[in-house]
Amino acid sequence: MYDIENARQRNGDAAEDRSDRIDEILNRPRLGYKESDPLVGDNYDEYPEQPDDLTTPEAREFVTDLFGHDLVSSIDDAIAETTPATGDRMIVREWREAFEKSIQLFSGESPDNDDEREQRLTDERLTELTDDYPDDMVTPTNPLVVSNLYAGLGLSADEIADVFSDDSNQRVKPEQVRRVLRNVGLIEATENDDNEPSHKLGGASLNFSESGNVGTNIDTEAVARDPSVTVERDE
Image (cartoon, rainbow, N blue to C red; front, side):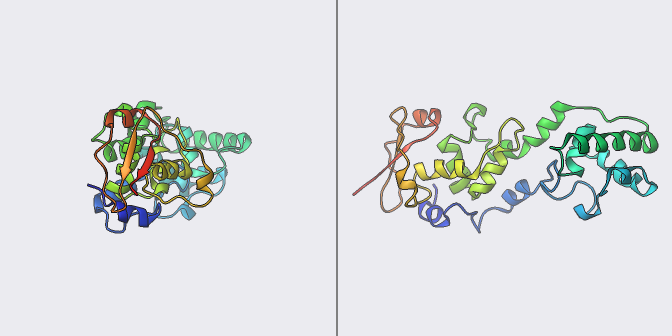
């Protein structure tokens, strides 16, 4: 049973008393420049600053360790981890050429491009946090899943969006998560939110009394299928 009142008071923030296991899952390394702790070394300041730095003798350990990491299975992965400028094609080309030269200098073999392994690793956080639900229910618009992540496991709205964004096919914004939480009464609506249209899909509703208890008139199958639910409060 969720502590509804506590969840409302958090207003989208993380629970201070959540399980250490949740922190361990959330803090696992992720591919991407400053997406998490660095995959190599202790600080991103220690990463090569320019593509030419990759072909110096000092870069041998960095290149070897980077391509030895489970999350790095291609030169594209290495570029994504090493530089934030992945949107600039010219810069990316310079880094690619430098990595190709460094591979020839230090290892002699190009890394295997194992997309299936990479996707499996990036899905790991979301899978562990939602292992009580069938895969087809695990979406950022499912109020049951999002409510459990927030009120049950203690994630913040930002963390929920971040975890769902591990999937390279979707980028979830915190406001999308907050909207779902507002719809089920786990975040109080602001004055601006009052102007948003109310949605009621499939006849599903959650009934919250003022005491914070969840009512029993919940069509769980309909809720699971619907991207949002309405909230009814007892007078």
